Image 1: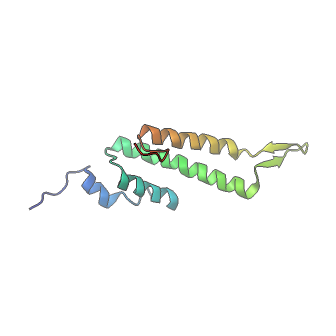
Image 2: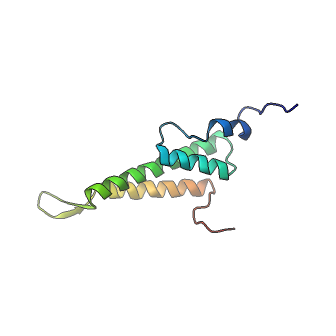
Length: 113
């Protein structure tokens, strides 16, 4: 007879976590499930880092969508073009996402090792 998995083990996590944290939107929850399926991510610290990484991904995506809707520039009160304020937020969120992926040692280049 097979013993039940220990608390915190990956066998138990597979049934619980693939959907991802509820506050993440569908694209990031799907990415969460894909990353857990394809990589051996264990421990609360690593899962917390993955969650923060995907929060940054979501923030960057939402910024990009709003900039796409509104345009990358606007006219200030002197009718001078200025960059959309969310461009900087998107840049920072993308950098945070990439830093999180590197910290988790996940492949971000698509190259085989």
